[in-house]
Amino acid sequence: MGWATYFAFILAAINTLTVTYFLAIDNYPSLKSVFPSFEIYILIIVSVGIPLLVAVGLAHYKKTQAFRSELDILVESNPYARRTIVNTEVILKLNLLLTNNLILESKNKNIDEKKIKELEDLVYTLEKLRNTRTFTNSGDFDYLKDELGLKG
Image (cartoon, rainbow, N blue to C red; front, side, top):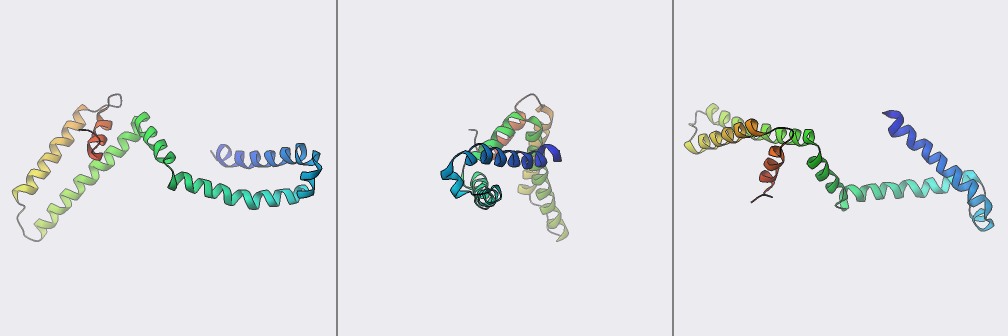
């Protein structure tokens, strides 16, 4: 993993810098006057390139819809990612309801019928989801759409 992810990028950067300098800049006197040596070329490219790449990466994650679209495609195409998201959401809901009811019981307050009905509805929804979903059908995806209010 380290080789494919990190070392390959370093080798690709070294290769690109070497090839562009010795095949392009070294053969053109006008560019040679701007970058008189390979070391100066590396310093200039790195000092401009790294901040530029960081800015582009930040824009990709925070300012554009590209990253969100990538995640949407991942959730739609990968049933395991979808299952993890649904399971996390279900566990969170169940824990919140149970914790709230436990707090009420701890304070010696009776749990009203509305809270009991809410818990029963959640249990029914979760049992239905558990019994109908598979990795090959759209049960998890339909549940996510319902939770996000995307399905009518």
